Image (tube, rainbow, N blue to C red; front, side, top):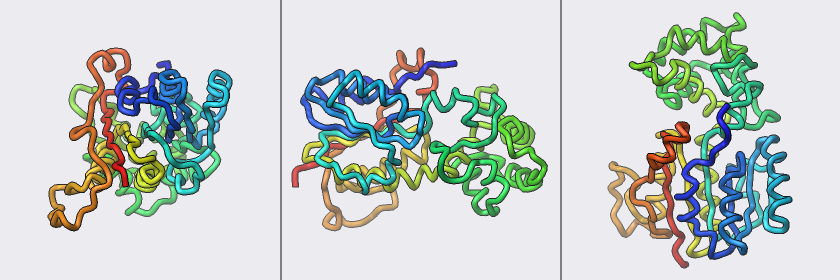
Length: 305
């Protein structure tokens, strides 16, 4: 089992600069690594952290004891940031995807290498497990999960196999679904990526509405920044990074994408980009944390009104 290692920790702390003090938002507490680093970097720094995972709330208790009066945990999905009363943050950080704790806990159903009920929910107390989604979703939703979110090359074969397997029990467990994917999904050359990887990821994104959460949460976090505050986001998937890139470009008064031909006088510049291109993990980090290989970090600074 791999221990939890916060991704791109050094880069995130340097961008947010907690040594200057102020209140910071950790929108994805997870294992608490980024929160601890922010609190350790500045005695005047305070952190409010969010997470819907009940296990994260338990881990947060240790942080409260270590940093009394400087840390607050909220059991809140960051897509619901509009409901957060606090504002005026000096910085906000998001680390999308799942944590090592979730991946390595077989009972949570995130791993296709260990037998467990096929769940994939970040918050096990709400929504539907992945097994129910696969048994009941219409074809359009399955295509969106497998083709669009999972970027599976053989998505037609996989979708048809899922529909054919309904009622058989094969979609109820991690290893059952993984065996279906080993037979029907694309098998990348060299065996570096397991055939189940893309489809599991796509179904997880669908079950948790992960892209919708990002689309709602990032603008709400930006609104809650103080002038000069920094918004930083770590993505692990091209679809996540696309949302971040387009929002940051829009806030910086730049074209959102290659087809955005609006004249400059129709754009509003509310922020400046700190990273014109996303930062990637260092070779040193990749050597001791292979799970960081797909991470991309972007950041911007809110301009004074």
